[in-house]
Amino acid sequence: MDGNPLVNIRNTNTIRYVVKNGRLYDGNTLDEIYPTPRKMDVGSWTKEVPKVTTEVKQ
Image (cartoon, rainbow, N blue to C red):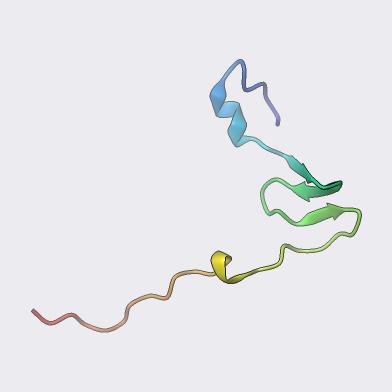
């Protein structure tokens, strides 16, 4: 974090890095930085919801 959350709780919005199981991730994109740099795996839960294009009749 860039700031202390004990001083201001809004500082939790400034997470720079995340560490999980010895792997380092970018806090904004969740791309892996260390030990093997790679983009985040895009699964079905990260895709956009399809837009409804049909007209609703009343």
